[in-house]
Length: 80
Length: 152
Image (cartoon, rainbow over all chains, first blue to last red; front, side, top):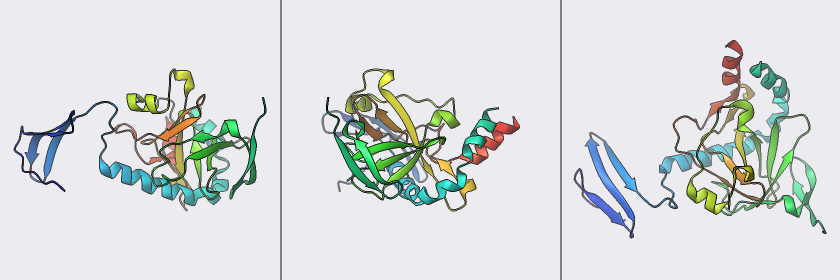
C-alpha cells in the first residue's frame, strides 16, 4: 500500500482522471473531495460491507415470511 | 418461437419451471453473492412480496418488495454507469425492488432502501445499486413506519 502525507488543499492523482483532494482535517476525521469520471463507482467502503451483511441476513428470513403473510392487509391499512 | 424452459431447483418452491426469457442476468452478482449471476423473479399470489431466486444455487432466494408499495415517495437518480451497464434506454425499461430482511422477531422486518435492485425488464439485466443517499436507510423498519402512517 502506498502511504502518503498530505496537507489541507493537497491533491492526489490516480490514473489519468481521478483526483482526491484533502478538504479539511479535524481531530480524527479528514474530509476528502473525490473527482472521478461518472463511470467510476465511488463508495464508502463500509456501505458495501453493510449491504453484504444485510444480504446474508436476508437469506435467513425465508421461512419466516409465512408469519407476516397478513401483511397485505397491514399495507392497505397503512394507505388508508 | 420456441420458448426454452428449464427446471430449476429451489428450496422455497421445490422444482420451478423457468422460461429462459425470464432469467435476469446480474453480471456482477449481488454483494456477498458475487458468484451467482442468474436469477428469476417469482411472484406469489395475493402477496406484496416476491422472490428473487438464484438459478445457480437453490438456497439463495431473497424476499423482495416493490418499494413504492411501502414508500410511495421513494425516488433516486440512476447513475450514468448503471444506465450503461444495464443498457437502460428509457424509464419504461426499469423495475425497482428492495430486499426484505425478516429477523426472528418478525415485527422488526426491515427493507433495504439504501441498495435497491434495479432491473432492465426488457434486456433482462439487473444489479444491486448502492445509493449514497442520506434520505434512505439501509434498515427501513416496515411495521414501525406503517404504524406511523396509520396514526397520521
